Length: 73
Image (cartoon, rainbow, N blue to C red; front, side):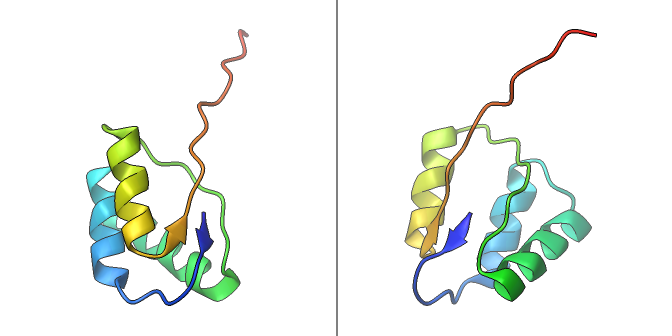
């Protein structure tokens, strides 16, 4: 995820992350790292991938969602 322009919705962003599977402390850490670095990789569990991407775009965030490969033991 990368900041793309002016980011003014940190509370909305944290709530969005919480709705997509992160705890509040995880969402706070994610937000802090994103604002400090301008770009971050992290794990979310979206119920609606396209909806999540639309909401992130509305917050001036660029994101790419990837499904990790499962490796058999």
